[in-house]
Length: 373
Image (cartoon, rainbow, N blue to C red; front, side, top):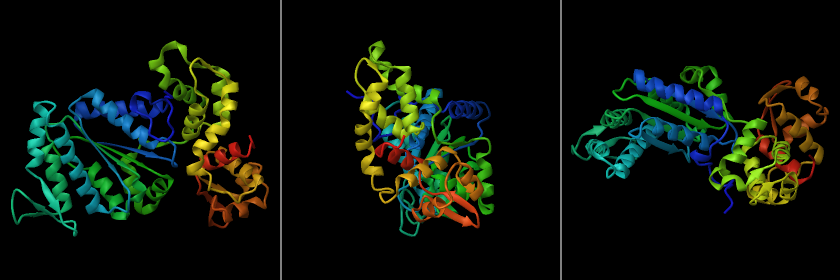
Protein backbone atom coordinates (compact mmCIF):
# COMPACT_ATOMS: atom_id res chain seq x y z
CA UNK A 1 0.00 0.00 0.00
CA UNK A 2 1.35 3.42 -0.97
CA UNK A 3 2.04 5.41 2.25
CA UNK A 4 1.90 8.78 0.48
CA UNK A 5 -1.48 10.42 -0.12
CA UNK A 6 -1.43 14.09 -1.16
CA UNK A 7 -5.23 14.20 -0.99
CA UNK A 8 -5.42 14.15 2.81
CA UNK A 9 -3.56 15.87 5.67
CA UNK A 10 -0.46 14.06 6.89
CA UNK A 11 -1.33 12.20 10.14
CA UNK A 12 0.56 13.36 13.25
CA UNK A 13 2.71 10.22 13.47
CA UNK A 14 4.06 10.95 9.97
CA UNK A 15 4.42 14.69 10.40
CA UNK A 16 7.91 15.90 9.54
CA UNK A 17 9.89 19.12 9.51
CA UNK A 18 8.62 22.37 11.03
CA UNK A 19 11.00 21.94 13.96
CA UNK A 20 10.62 25.56 15.10
CA UNK A 21 6.83 25.12 15.32
CA UNK A 22 7.16 21.88 17.29
CA UNK A 23 9.68 23.39 19.71
CA UNK A 24 7.47 26.43 20.26
CA UNK A 25 4.42 24.22 20.82
CA UNK A 26 6.29 22.20 23.45
CA UNK A 27 7.28 25.43 25.21
CA UNK A 28 3.66 26.65 25.27
CA UNK A 29 2.38 23.30 26.53
CA UNK A 30 4.89 23.38 29.37
CA UNK A 31 3.89 26.96 30.16
CA UNK A 32 0.24 25.91 30.29
CA UNK A 33 1.14 23.06 32.66
CA UNK A 34 3.21 25.19 35.02
CA UNK A 35 1.41 28.53 34.90
CA UNK A 36 -2.06 27.51 33.65
CA UNK A 37 -1.94 30.46 31.28
CA UNK A 38 -3.32 30.93 27.77
CA UNK A 39 -1.23 30.83 24.58
CA UNK A 40 -1.81 31.22 20.84
CA UNK A 41 -0.29 29.90 17.61
CA UNK A 42 -0.87 31.23 14.09
CA UNK A 43 -0.16 29.07 11.03
CA UNK A 44 -0.47 30.90 7.71
CA UNK A 45 0.27 29.93 4.15
CA UNK A 46 -1.20 29.03 0.79
CA UNK A 47 -3.37 26.00 0.19
CA UNK A 48 -1.37 22.76 0.13
CA UNK A 49 1.35 24.05 2.46
CA UNK A 50 0.42 21.69 5.29
CA UNK A 51 -1.48 24.00 7.66
CA UNK A 52 -4.13 21.43 8.61
CA UNK A 53 -1.47 18.74 9.12
CA UNK A 54 0.45 21.09 11.42
CA UNK A 55 -2.70 22.04 13.32
CA UNK A 56 -3.40 18.37 14.04
CA UNK A 57 0.21 17.77 15.03
CA UNK A 58 -0.18 20.46 17.67
CA UNK A 59 -3.30 18.67 18.96
CA UNK A 60 -1.36 15.38 19.10
CA UNK A 61 1.52 16.99 21.02
CA UNK A 62 -0.95 18.34 23.58
CA UNK A 63 -2.46 14.87 24.03
CA UNK A 64 1.01 13.36 24.46
CA UNK A 65 1.65 15.89 27.21
CA UNK A 66 -1.58 14.97 29.01
CA UNK A 67 -4.23 12.54 27.65
CA UNK A 68 -6.92 14.47 29.56
CA UNK A 69 -6.44 17.44 27.22
CA UNK A 70 -9.71 18.61 25.71
CA UNK A 71 -9.30 19.47 22.04
CA UNK A 72 -11.78 20.73 19.47
CA UNK A 73 -11.33 21.67 15.82
CA UNK A 74 -13.56 24.16 14.04
CA UNK A 75 -13.04 24.02 10.24
CA UNK A 76 -14.70 27.05 8.69
CA UNK A 77 -16.54 26.44 5.43
CA UNK A 78 -18.32 29.77 5.06
CA UNK A 79 -18.13 33.34 6.30
CA UNK A 80 -18.13 33.40 10.10
CA UNK A 81 -18.79 36.13 12.63
CA UNK A 82 -18.39 36.32 16.38
CA UNK A 83 -21.67 34.62 17.27
CA UNK A 84 -21.20 31.72 14.86
CA UNK A 85 -17.59 31.12 15.91
CA UNK A 86 -18.30 31.06 19.64
CA UNK A 87 -21.39 28.90 19.16
CA UNK A 88 -19.45 26.45 16.97
CA UNK A 89 -16.70 26.13 19.59
CA UNK A 90 -19.29 25.47 22.31
CA UNK A 91 -20.99 22.91 20.07
CA UNK A 92 -17.71 21.13 19.32
CA UNK A 93 -16.86 20.99 23.03
CA UNK A 94 -20.14 19.26 23.70
CA UNK A 95 -19.50 16.81 20.85
CA UNK A 96 -16.08 16.08 22.33
CA UNK A 97 -17.65 15.28 25.69
CA UNK A 98 -20.23 13.01 24.08
CA UNK A 99 -17.59 11.14 22.06
CA UNK A 100 -15.28 10.57 25.05
CA UNK A 101 -17.79 9.87 27.82
CA UNK A 102 -17.12 6.12 27.82
CA UNK A 103 -13.32 6.39 28.04
CA UNK A 104 -12.92 6.94 31.77
CA UNK A 105 -14.28 8.67 34.85
CA UNK A 106 -12.68 12.01 34.00
CA UNK A 107 -14.46 12.16 30.66
CA UNK A 108 -17.71 10.91 32.21
CA UNK A 109 -17.64 13.90 34.56
CA UNK A 110 -16.71 16.21 31.70
CA UNK A 111 -19.66 14.98 29.64
CA UNK A 112 -22.03 15.43 32.56
CA UNK A 113 -20.91 19.03 33.14
CA UNK A 114 -21.02 19.89 29.45
CA UNK A 115 -24.50 18.41 29.14
CA UNK A 116 -25.69 20.68 31.92
CA UNK A 117 -25.16 23.68 29.64
CA UNK A 118 -26.63 21.97 26.58
CA UNK A 119 -28.36 24.55 24.42
CA UNK A 120 -30.14 25.07 21.13
CA UNK A 121 -29.04 28.07 19.06
CA UNK A 122 -31.62 30.18 17.31
CA UNK A 123 -31.09 31.79 13.92
CA UNK A 124 -30.43 35.10 15.70
CA UNK A 125 -27.33 33.67 17.37
CA UNK A 126 -29.04 33.63 20.78
CA UNK A 127 -28.93 30.35 22.70
CA UNK A 128 -31.86 28.98 24.67
CA UNK A 129 -30.81 26.79 27.60
CA UNK A 130 -32.59 23.43 27.50
CA UNK A 131 -32.05 22.77 31.20
CA UNK A 132 -33.61 26.14 32.12
CA UNK A 133 -36.64 26.84 29.91
CA UNK A 134 -36.96 30.50 29.01
CA UNK A 135 -33.36 31.33 29.89
CA UNK A 136 -31.31 32.84 27.07
CA UNK A 137 -27.56 33.15 26.66
CA UNK A 138 -25.64 35.33 24.27
CA UNK A 139 -22.87 33.49 22.36
CA UNK A 140 -20.11 34.81 24.61
CA UNK A 141 -21.93 33.66 27.76
CA UNK A 142 -22.64 30.31 26.12
CA UNK A 143 -18.96 29.85 25.28
CA UNK A 144 -17.84 30.86 28.77
CA UNK A 145 -20.35 28.51 30.39
CA UNK A 146 -19.14 25.63 28.22
CA UNK A 147 -15.48 26.41 28.97
CA UNK A 148 -16.26 26.59 32.69
CA UNK A 149 -17.72 23.09 32.43
CA UNK A 150 -14.27 21.95 31.23
CA UNK A 151 -12.47 23.52 34.18
CA UNK A 152 -10.98 20.22 35.45
CA UNK A 153 -9.09 19.68 32.20
CA UNK A 154 -5.36 20.48 32.17
CA UNK A 155 -5.80 22.35 28.89
CA UNK A 156 -8.36 23.11 26.18
CA UNK A 157 -6.92 23.26 22.66
CA UNK A 158 -9.15 25.25 20.30
CA UNK A 159 -8.14 24.84 16.65
CA UNK A 160 -9.68 27.04 13.96
CA UNK A 161 -8.94 26.09 10.35
CA UNK A 162 -9.51 28.27 7.25
CA UNK A 163 -9.70 31.31 9.53
CA UNK A 164 -9.51 33.71 6.59
CA UNK A 165 -13.29 33.16 6.43
CA UNK A 166 -13.76 35.10 9.68
CA UNK A 167 -15.28 38.56 9.27
CA UNK A 168 -13.81 41.49 11.19
CA UNK A 169 -15.83 40.87 14.40
CA UNK A 170 -14.87 37.18 14.09
CA UNK A 171 -11.20 38.14 13.87
CA UNK A 172 -11.66 40.25 16.99
CA UNK A 173 -13.11 37.22 18.78
CA UNK A 174 -9.72 35.50 18.51
CA UNK A 175 -8.38 38.10 20.93
CA UNK A 176 -11.33 37.51 23.26
CA UNK A 177 -10.59 33.78 23.32
CA UNK A 178 -6.84 34.19 23.74
CA UNK A 179 -7.17 36.69 26.58
CA UNK A 180 -10.07 35.03 28.39
CA UNK A 181 -9.68 34.70 32.13
CA UNK A 182 -11.09 31.22 32.76
CA UNK A 183 -10.37 28.39 35.16
CA UNK A 184 -8.91 26.26 32.37
CA UNK A 185 -5.95 27.37 30.22
CA UNK A 186 -6.53 27.68 26.47
CA UNK A 187 -4.17 27.04 23.59
CA UNK A 188 -5.67 28.76 20.56
CA UNK A 189 -4.34 27.43 17.23
CA UNK A 190 -5.41 29.38 14.14
CA UNK A 191 -4.66 28.33 10.56
CA UNK A 192 -5.45 30.41 7.49
CA UNK A 193 -4.35 31.63 4.09
CA UNK A 194 -1.98 34.53 3.39
CA UNK A 195 -4.94 36.92 3.33
CA UNK A 196 -5.53 36.20 7.02
CA UNK A 197 -2.04 37.37 7.94
CA UNK A 198 -2.43 40.39 5.65
CA UNK A 199 -5.62 41.40 7.50
CA UNK A 200 -4.00 40.90 10.88
CA UNK A 201 -1.12 43.11 9.77
CA UNK A 202 -3.44 46.04 9.05
CA UNK A 203 -3.70 48.76 11.68
CA UNK A 204 -7.13 47.63 12.83
CA UNK A 205 -5.95 44.06 13.18
CA UNK A 206 -2.72 44.73 15.03
CA UNK A 207 -4.16 44.17 18.54
CA UNK A 208 -5.21 40.72 17.37
CA UNK A 209 -1.82 40.11 15.74
CA UNK A 210 -0.14 40.78 19.09
CA UNK A 211 -1.71 37.70 20.65
CA UNK A 212 0.43 35.64 18.24
CA UNK A 213 3.66 37.49 19.00
CA UNK A 214 6.55 35.05 18.78
CA UNK A 215 4.22 32.27 17.69
CA UNK A 216 3.49 33.04 14.03
CA UNK A 217 4.62 30.49 11.46
CA UNK A 218 4.74 30.86 7.68
CA UNK A 219 3.91 27.43 6.32
CA UNK A 220 5.79 27.82 3.07
CA UNK A 221 8.34 25.50 1.49
CA UNK A 222 10.39 22.73 3.07
CA UNK A 223 14.14 22.96 3.31
CA UNK A 224 16.03 20.10 1.72
CA UNK A 225 16.37 18.49 5.17
CA UNK A 226 12.64 18.84 5.83
CA UNK A 227 11.83 17.27 2.47
CA UNK A 228 14.03 14.33 3.39
CA UNK A 229 12.18 13.99 6.71
CA UNK A 230 8.80 14.18 4.96
CA UNK A 231 9.83 11.44 2.53
CA UNK A 232 11.26 9.18 5.22
CA UNK A 233 8.56 9.52 7.90
CA UNK A 234 5.87 7.39 6.16
CA UNK A 235 8.40 4.57 5.66
CA UNK A 236 9.32 4.07 9.33
CA UNK A 237 6.82 1.24 9.79
CA UNK A 238 8.18 -0.57 6.72
CA UNK A 239 11.61 -1.16 8.15
CA UNK A 240 14.87 -0.86 6.20
CA UNK A 241 13.64 -2.57 3.02
CA UNK A 242 12.36 0.74 1.55
CA UNK A 243 14.34 3.98 1.49
CA UNK A 244 15.10 7.08 -0.55
CA UNK A 245 18.41 7.48 -2.31
CA UNK A 246 19.93 10.93 -1.52
CA UNK A 247 19.91 11.81 -5.23
CA UNK A 248 16.18 11.03 -5.35
CA UNK A 249 15.54 13.29 -2.36
CA UNK A 250 17.42 16.09 -4.06
CA UNK A 251 15.46 15.63 -7.28
CA UNK A 252 12.15 15.81 -5.39
CA UNK A 253 13.38 19.00 -3.74
CA UNK A 254 14.42 20.51 -7.08
CA UNK A 255 11.17 19.62 -8.84
CA UNK A 256 8.83 20.63 -6.01
CA UNK A 257 10.86 23.61 -4.77
CA UNK A 258 10.10 22.11 -1.36
CA UNK A 259 6.37 22.80 -1.63
CA UNK A 260 4.72 20.17 0.65
CA UNK A 261 1.82 19.26 -1.66
CA UNK A 262 4.10 18.59 -4.63
CA UNK A 263 6.55 16.70 -2.42
CA UNK A 264 3.69 14.33 -1.56
CA UNK A 265 2.56 14.02 -5.21
CA UNK A 266 6.08 13.21 -6.42
CA UNK A 267 6.64 10.77 -3.55
CA UNK A 268 3.34 9.00 -4.22
CA UNK A 269 4.13 8.64 -7.93
CA UNK A 270 7.72 7.41 -7.37
CA UNK A 271 7.05 5.02 -4.50
CA UNK A 272 7.90 1.33 -4.63
CA UNK A 273 9.46 -1.09 -2.20
CA UNK A 274 13.24 -1.07 -2.24
CA UNK A 275 15.50 1.91 -2.86
CA UNK A 276 13.73 4.79 -4.58
CA UNK A 277 16.15 6.37 -7.06
CA UNK A 278 16.42 9.63 -8.96
CA UNK A 279 15.29 7.70 -12.05
CA UNK A 280 12.14 6.61 -10.20
CA UNK A 281 11.37 10.25 -9.43
CA UNK A 282 11.88 11.23 -13.07
CA UNK A 283 9.66 8.38 -14.23
CA UNK A 284 6.96 9.47 -11.79
CA UNK A 285 6.71 13.10 -12.91
CA UNK A 286 3.85 12.42 -15.31
CA UNK A 287 1.93 10.56 -12.62
CA UNK A 288 2.54 13.37 -10.11
CA UNK A 289 1.26 15.95 -12.59
CA UNK A 290 -1.84 13.85 -13.23
CA UNK A 291 -2.41 13.50 -9.49
CA UNK A 292 -2.24 17.25 -8.90
CA UNK A 293 -4.26 18.07 -12.03
CA UNK A 294 -7.81 18.17 -10.58
CA UNK A 295 -6.76 21.01 -8.30
CA UNK A 296 -4.14 22.85 -10.37
CA UNK A 297 -4.61 22.08 -14.05
CA UNK A 298 -7.16 24.82 -14.74
CA UNK A 299 -5.07 27.50 -13.08
CA UNK A 300 -3.17 29.63 -15.62
CA UNK A 301 -4.03 27.50 -18.65
CA UNK A 302 -3.74 30.61 -20.84
CA UNK A 303 -0.31 31.56 -19.51
CA UNK A 304 2.72 31.29 -21.78
CA UNK A 305 5.83 29.36 -20.82
CA UNK A 306 7.61 32.63 -20.11
CA UNK A 307 4.71 33.71 -17.86
CA UNK A 308 5.23 30.53 -15.85
CA UNK A 309 9.00 31.05 -15.70
CA UNK A 310 8.44 34.59 -14.42
CA UNK A 311 5.95 33.31 -11.82
CA UNK A 312 8.47 30.68 -10.67
CA UNK A 313 11.15 33.36 -10.20
CA UNK A 314 8.78 35.42 -8.07
CA UNK A 315 7.64 32.36 -6.09
CA UNK A 316 11.26 31.39 -5.45
CA UNK A 317 11.88 34.79 -3.88
CA UNK A 318 9.66 33.67 -0.94
CA UNK A 319 8.17 37.16 -0.82
CA UNK A 320 4.50 38.04 -0.84
CA UNK A 321 4.97 41.75 -1.52
CA UNK A 322 7.40 43.19 -4.06
CA UNK A 323 8.20 46.44 -5.79
CA UNK A 324 8.70 46.67 -9.54
CA UNK A 325 12.47 47.02 -9.18
CA UNK A 326 12.62 43.91 -7.01
CA UNK A 327 10.62 41.90 -9.56
CA UNK A 328 12.96 42.99 -12.37
CA UNK A 329 15.99 42.08 -10.25
CA UNK A 330 14.66 38.50 -10.15
CA UNK A 331 15.12 38.31 -13.93
CA UNK A 332 11.49 38.99 -14.89
CA UNK A 333 11.35 41.06 -18.08
CA UNK A 334 9.35 44.35 -17.83
CA UNK A 335 6.48 43.31 -20.17
CA UNK A 336 5.70 40.31 -17.96
CA UNK A 337 4.82 42.35 -14.88
CA UNK A 338 1.52 43.68 -16.35
CA UNK A 339 0.94 40.26 -17.94
CA UNK A 340 1.13 38.61 -14.52
CA UNK A 341 -1.32 41.20 -13.19
CA UNK A 342 -3.81 40.35 -15.96
CA UNK A 343 -3.39 36.64 -15.19
CA UNK A 344 -4.15 37.26 -11.51
CA UNK A 345 -0.71 36.15 -10.35
CA UNK A 346 0.10 39.64 -9.06
CA UNK A 347 -2.14 42.40 -7.76
CA UNK A 348 -1.03 46.01 -7.97
CA UNK A 349 -1.77 47.63 -4.61
CA UNK A 350 -0.04 50.95 -5.34
CA UNK A 351 2.11 52.47 -8.05
CA UNK A 352 5.11 50.15 -8.40
CA UNK A 353 3.97 47.88 -5.54
CA UNK A 354 2.54 44.37 -5.98
CA UNK A 355 1.40 41.42 -3.88
CA UNK A 356 1.51 37.77 -4.91
CA UNK A 357 -2.06 36.50 -5.23
CA UNK A 358 -1.71 32.95 -6.52
CA UNK A 359 -0.10 30.13 -4.55
CA UNK A 360 3.51 29.27 -5.52
CA UNK A 361 2.46 25.64 -5.99
CA UNK A 362 0.60 26.74 -9.14
CA UNK A 363 3.85 27.96 -10.69
CA UNK A 364 5.73 24.83 -9.73
CA UNK A 365 2.96 22.55 -11.02
CA UNK A 366 2.86 24.21 -14.43
CA UNK A 367 6.65 24.19 -14.63
CA UNK A 368 6.49 20.42 -14.08
CA UNK A 369 3.60 19.96 -16.50
CA UNK A 370 5.35 21.90 -19.26
CA UNK A 371 8.79 20.47 -18.49
CA UNK A 372 10.20 23.92 -17.79
CA UNK A 373 12.46 22.80 -14.93
